[in-house]
Length: 219
Image (cartoon, rainbow, N blue to C red; front, side, top):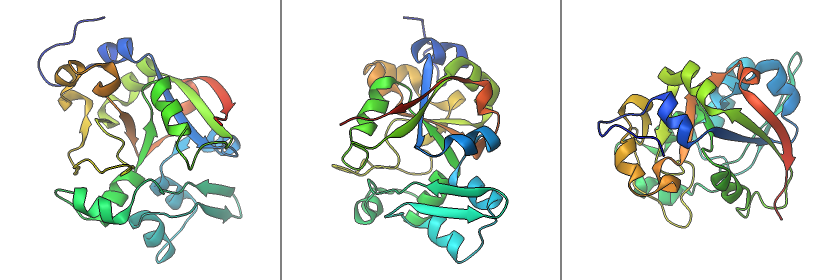
């Protein structure tokens, strides 16, 4: 195992030695859109699909209890996934320094990756995802984190989940790579060091980092 400095933060090289691959799980019909536009956050989708208030406010600042399908005369159809694992009441009690609306807006501005296959499989095994076909992109961690280092945040929890209980969370729960307490959390074990990796707003050149594209289902 490579050495990690005791000071805060982690470099792309040190991070990728421990987490060589990142995984993004998307809707099964998302591949054509990803090839055309890259990986887009919810907010970037709403921008490109020209969604305005009040529809935009409902999608971006409230917990989505169901998928949202958008249709654009030029860009076609796209599905924004639901947020069923995030319960409003539990979220409200868990937030320390922002409102549920602010939290939703924060998450909707990011593109999320799982740092390990184990985390990916756990997410796919959740009740709402189980027995459904998903598009899974495997991404070269070193290349992505090197290019997007300044736009990447790391999180020690599943920020969009409050089941079975809601960890305390706030706007500083998603921390830049240079400030994340990586060495401190590594002492707890690799599985618990980083739970989520996120890139702000979009990864338009995601195809430059993808090493495999698969359709997966867990029953």
